[in-house]
Image (cartoon, rainbow, N blue to C red; front, side, top):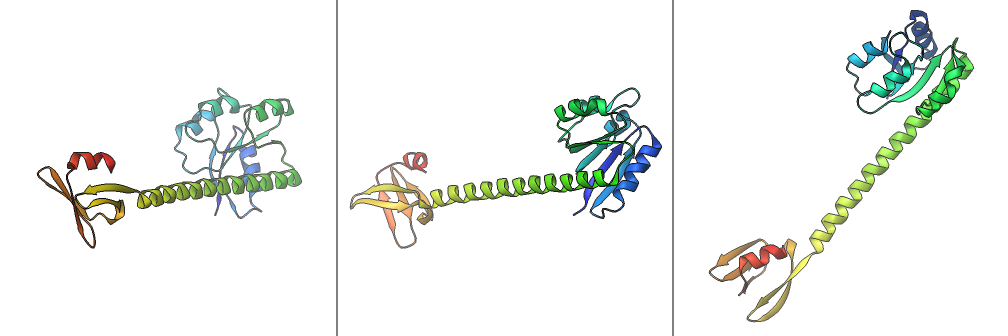
Length: 196
Protein backbone atom coordinates (compact mmCIF):
# COMPACT_ATOMS: atom_id res chain seq x y z
CA UNK A 1 0.00 0.00 0.00
CA UNK A 2 1.34 3.41 -0.98
CA UNK A 3 1.54 6.16 1.62
CA UNK A 4 -0.08 9.13 -0.10
CA UNK A 5 1.50 12.53 0.58
CA UNK A 6 1.06 16.13 -0.42
CA UNK A 7 3.57 18.95 -0.06
CA UNK A 8 2.62 22.56 0.66
CA UNK A 9 5.39 25.17 0.39
CA UNK A 10 5.56 28.54 -1.30
CA UNK A 11 9.16 27.90 -2.41
CA UNK A 12 9.57 25.72 -5.53
CA UNK A 13 13.03 24.56 -4.41
CA UNK A 14 11.61 23.41 -1.06
CA UNK A 15 8.91 21.38 -2.83
CA UNK A 16 11.64 19.90 -5.02
CA UNK A 17 13.57 19.07 -1.82
CA UNK A 18 10.63 17.07 -0.45
CA UNK A 19 10.25 15.26 -3.76
CA UNK A 20 13.95 14.32 -3.74
CA UNK A 21 13.88 13.31 -0.08
CA UNK A 22 10.97 10.94 -0.77
CA UNK A 23 12.57 9.24 -3.81
CA UNK A 24 14.39 6.48 -1.87
CA UNK A 25 11.13 5.41 -0.23
CA UNK A 26 9.11 3.42 -2.74
CA UNK A 27 6.16 3.06 -0.40
CA UNK A 28 5.66 6.85 -0.36
CA UNK A 29 3.89 8.63 -3.18
CA UNK A 30 3.85 12.40 -3.56
CA UNK A 31 0.49 12.88 -5.24
CA UNK A 32 0.32 16.69 -5.25
CA UNK A 33 2.33 19.84 -4.59
CA UNK A 34 0.87 23.22 -3.69
CA UNK A 35 2.45 26.65 -3.42
CA UNK A 36 -0.06 28.12 -0.96
CA UNK A 37 -2.50 27.23 1.78
CA UNK A 38 -5.39 28.64 -0.25
CA UNK A 39 -4.52 26.49 -3.26
CA UNK A 40 -4.37 23.41 -1.01
CA UNK A 41 -7.66 24.12 0.71
CA UNK A 42 -9.35 24.70 -2.65
CA UNK A 43 -8.35 21.28 -3.98
CA UNK A 44 -10.12 17.99 -3.31
CA UNK A 45 -8.14 15.59 -1.15
CA UNK A 46 -9.07 11.95 -0.86
CA UNK A 47 -7.20 9.43 1.24
CA UNK A 48 -4.21 11.61 2.05
CA UNK A 49 -1.92 10.04 4.64
CA UNK A 50 0.69 12.77 5.18
CA UNK A 51 1.01 16.53 4.77
CA UNK A 52 4.52 17.94 4.42
CA UNK A 53 3.76 21.52 5.36
CA UNK A 54 5.74 24.77 5.46
CA UNK A 55 4.83 27.26 8.17
CA UNK A 56 5.84 30.66 6.80
CA UNK A 57 3.84 31.29 3.63
CA UNK A 58 2.28 34.47 2.21
CA UNK A 59 -1.34 35.30 3.12
CA UNK A 60 -2.05 32.16 5.18
CA UNK A 61 0.55 30.24 7.18
CA UNK A 62 0.64 26.51 7.78
CA UNK A 63 -1.05 26.74 11.19
CA UNK A 64 -3.98 28.70 9.76
CA UNK A 65 -4.31 26.20 6.95
CA UNK A 66 -4.62 23.34 9.46
CA UNK A 67 -7.34 25.25 11.32
CA UNK A 68 -9.28 25.57 8.04
CA UNK A 69 -8.72 21.95 6.92
CA UNK A 70 -11.97 20.15 6.11
CA UNK A 71 -12.38 16.48 6.99
CA UNK A 72 -10.02 14.15 8.81
CA UNK A 73 -6.57 15.63 9.20
CA UNK A 74 -3.72 13.51 7.81
CA UNK A 75 -0.45 13.14 9.66
CA UNK A 76 1.34 16.49 9.63
CA UNK A 77 5.08 16.94 9.25
CA UNK A 78 6.17 20.56 9.33
CA UNK A 79 9.11 21.29 7.05
CA UNK A 80 10.44 24.77 7.71
CA UNK A 81 13.57 26.88 7.90
CA UNK A 82 12.59 28.20 11.34
CA UNK A 83 13.03 26.29 14.57
CA UNK A 84 11.03 28.93 16.49
CA UNK A 85 7.71 27.20 15.78
CA UNK A 86 8.50 23.70 17.08
CA UNK A 87 6.43 23.95 20.27
CA UNK A 88 3.43 25.40 18.47
CA UNK A 89 3.75 22.71 15.78
CA UNK A 90 3.47 19.94 18.35
CA UNK A 91 0.57 21.76 20.02
CA UNK A 92 -1.12 21.49 16.59
CA UNK A 93 -0.70 17.68 16.79
CA UNK A 94 2.19 17.55 14.33
CA UNK A 95 3.82 14.15 13.99
CA UNK A 96 7.23 15.72 13.39
CA UNK A 97 9.14 18.88 12.63
CA UNK A 98 11.95 18.96 10.04
CA UNK A 99 14.31 21.87 9.42
CA UNK A 100 15.38 22.97 5.94
CA UNK A 101 17.62 22.01 4.30
CA UNK A 102 16.45 18.46 4.86
CA UNK A 103 18.99 16.14 6.46
CA UNK A 104 18.73 12.60 5.00
CA UNK A 105 19.27 10.85 8.34
CA UNK A 106 16.71 13.01 10.10
CA UNK A 107 14.24 12.49 7.25
CA UNK A 108 14.74 8.72 7.50
CA UNK A 109 13.66 8.92 11.15
CA UNK A 110 10.56 10.88 10.11
CA UNK A 111 9.72 8.29 7.44
CA UNK A 112 9.89 5.50 10.04
CA UNK A 113 7.71 7.50 12.46
CA UNK A 114 5.12 7.96 9.71
CA UNK A 115 5.14 4.23 8.94
CA UNK A 116 4.80 3.36 12.63
CA UNK A 117 1.94 5.81 13.17
CA UNK A 118 0.04 4.62 10.09
CA UNK A 119 0.51 1.00 11.18
CA UNK A 120 -0.91 1.86 14.62
CA UNK A 121 -3.83 3.69 13.00
CA UNK A 122 -4.52 0.69 10.74
CA UNK A 123 -4.35 -1.71 13.68
CA UNK A 124 -6.73 0.51 15.63
CA UNK A 125 -9.19 0.55 12.72
CA UNK A 126 -8.97 -3.24 12.42
CA UNK A 127 -9.51 -3.60 16.18
CA UNK A 128 -12.56 -1.32 16.05
CA UNK A 129 -13.93 -3.25 13.07
CA UNK A 130 -13.38 -6.55 14.86
CA UNK A 131 -15.09 -5.19 17.99
CA UNK A 132 -18.08 -4.05 15.92
CA UNK A 133 -18.29 -7.49 14.30
CA UNK A 134 -18.18 -9.22 17.68
CA UNK A 135 -20.90 -6.93 19.06
CA UNK A 136 -23.08 -7.59 16.00
CA UNK A 137 -22.60 -11.35 16.42
CA UNK A 138 -23.41 -11.13 20.14
CA UNK A 139 -26.59 -9.24 19.29
CA UNK A 140 -27.49 -11.82 16.66
CA UNK A 141 -26.82 -14.73 19.04
CA UNK A 142 -28.87 -13.05 21.77
CA UNK A 143 -31.70 -12.59 19.28
CA UNK A 144 -31.42 -16.21 18.15
CA UNK A 145 -31.55 -17.44 21.75
CA UNK A 146 -34.52 -15.26 22.65
CA UNK A 147 -37.71 -17.10 23.38
CA UNK A 148 -41.22 -16.30 24.47
CA UNK A 149 -43.78 -18.12 26.57
CA UNK A 150 -46.92 -19.18 24.74
CA UNK A 151 -50.01 -20.16 26.77
CA UNK A 152 -52.36 -22.61 25.10
CA UNK A 153 -55.24 -24.73 26.35
CA UNK A 154 -52.69 -27.56 26.75
CA UNK A 155 -50.33 -25.50 28.96
CA UNK A 156 -47.34 -23.20 28.58
CA UNK A 157 -44.73 -23.68 25.86
CA UNK A 158 -41.35 -22.02 25.49
CA UNK A 159 -40.84 -21.04 21.83
CA UNK A 160 -37.55 -19.82 20.37
CA UNK A 161 -38.10 -16.83 18.11
CA UNK A 162 -36.02 -18.47 15.38
CA UNK A 163 -38.41 -21.43 15.34
CA UNK A 164 -41.41 -19.29 14.43
CA UNK A 165 -42.16 -19.65 10.73
CA UNK A 166 -45.04 -17.18 10.88
CA UNK A 167 -47.92 -16.04 13.07
CA UNK A 168 -51.51 -16.16 11.97
CA UNK A 169 -54.32 -14.18 13.54
CA UNK A 170 -57.59 -16.09 13.76
CA UNK A 171 -60.21 -13.91 15.46
CA UNK A 172 -59.08 -13.48 19.08
CA UNK A 173 -56.60 -16.32 18.74
CA UNK A 174 -53.08 -16.52 17.37
CA UNK A 175 -51.68 -19.56 15.64
CA UNK A 176 -47.90 -20.06 15.89
CA UNK A 177 -46.65 -22.01 12.90
CA UNK A 178 -43.52 -23.86 13.97
CA UNK A 179 -41.42 -26.43 12.06
CA UNK A 180 -43.01 -29.51 13.70
CA UNK A 181 -46.33 -28.25 15.07
CA UNK A 182 -48.80 -25.44 15.52
CA UNK A 183 -49.72 -23.75 18.78
CA UNK A 184 -52.98 -21.90 19.21
CA UNK A 185 -53.25 -19.34 21.96
CA UNK A 186 -56.06 -17.14 23.20
CA UNK A 187 -53.84 -14.03 23.20
CA UNK A 188 -54.09 -11.41 20.48
CA UNK A 189 -51.57 -10.82 17.74
CA UNK A 190 -50.98 -7.33 19.16
CA UNK A 191 -49.90 -8.90 22.47
CA UNK A 192 -47.27 -11.05 20.75
CA UNK A 193 -45.99 -8.27 18.52
CA UNK A 194 -44.91 -6.40 21.65
CA UNK A 195 -43.15 -9.58 22.84
CA UNK A 196 -41.26 -9.94 19.58
